Image 1 (cartoon, rainbow, N blue to C red):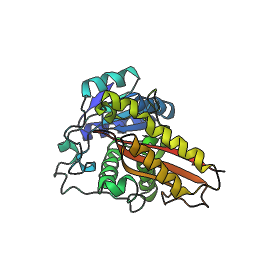
Image 2 (image 1 turned 120 degrees about the vertical axis):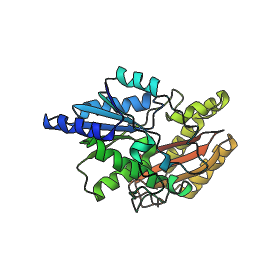
Image 3 (image 1 turned 45 degrees about the vertical axis):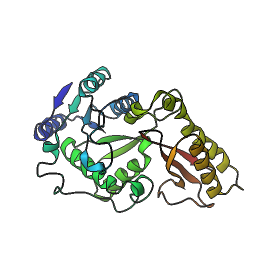
Image 4 (image 1 turned 90 degrees about the vertical axis):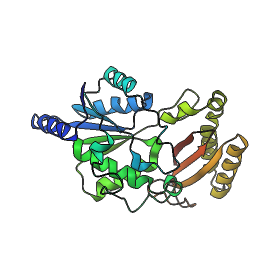
Length: 283
């Protein structure tokens, strides 16, 4: 596996690969890799000749009271894991490589829809940080295909919107959520859960599945489903950020006329903020 930290050196290497007719798939990450990330790499290997994975903990997508400083950084272990699954290129830039003028004055890229709901409502500026860094990485890596996990479903939609609006010749593929044995969506932040919280954490998925069953009853009121879900989670020790049922493509609050839905939830359990979702088709 080739490892680059310099954007210009990686760009030059990618140009040479493309001159040879090679296609490139890209998996951007913030490191502390788990099986969910590695499954994205495995999918990427099916979609292109060369797989590039990046590890960069991006400061511009963290709010002032969020966990940027404590976010786990495990580059040595991550490198070994990527080698084991056959990743070909690893990109590990520094803050100075990405934001040489300083992140406060760096140009930004913003999607003007989809970003003020769900996670965007409780994390102002988060998606501007996401779209800016992804745009920078896309310009460096020049991928034909990029893989994003659907655990961050809103992020997946926002990136798709950015690529469409800016007419980037990149195919965005959403990968299904990888889960722990108890059903919890895999996340780098799961390591912050205490032992008892790890057992409790499965309840988030259980409540989402219960809500899905309730929505299949055409007489069921959507607001009642959401209220009941929030109460169930609170009774199990979760601090609910949001539990929403939205139209899957626009993220607007769902109505009785919508059939393609997304149940999306975010809640704190102890230190970590857990997110999960489920696509629901009422047809």
